[in-house]
Amino acid sequence: MVKAYAQEHIYKHPWERVTSASWRKFADPENKRTLSHILEVDTLNRKLDPLSGKLYTTRALTIHAPGPWFVRKIIGQDICHCVESTVVDAQSKSMQLATRNVSLQKFIEVEEKIRYDPHPDNPTGWTICRQETSIRIKPLSALASMAEKVEQRCAERFMQNSVKGREVMERICKYLEAESSWMAL
Image (cartoon, rainbow, N blue to C red; front, side):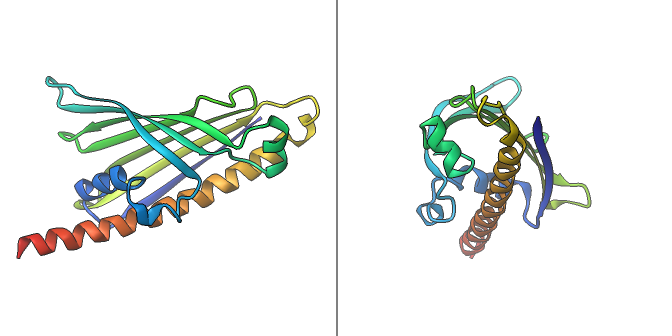
């Protein structure tokens, strides 16, 4: 069984500001409380392709394991390691992120895809964010009947964390907007 959902959000900020906020989302100490499920983020690789101008980045994320506490107790782990791959194409103004777990794969598979593009109705002022997430619990013999409920609980938590992430992004965008206004003086 797979639980999947998709969300869209419109940032009333230009693409450059929103993508800058995306890079700062986990680094800002003020966001540690809001994004408390994120324990650590490390950049593993960053490469700028000189021909295409695209930026390729790979980051390792360590997070609190998703799901109800009793499932974490059964699997014996409270943390989950994930890999995030990002491609930024400044020419076409597209930023794509794909994140998947690399630990706990015999219990759960999570894949999240996020894409930031200029909004078609206001391409210089707004950014559209499209997010798709799929969660698949691999049933354990003792939990086979509960797999769907666990997937639902995980999806609910991911959606709650998505809201928190958007709040952080909005706060950073407003900070960047104020910063650029101050620099223009």
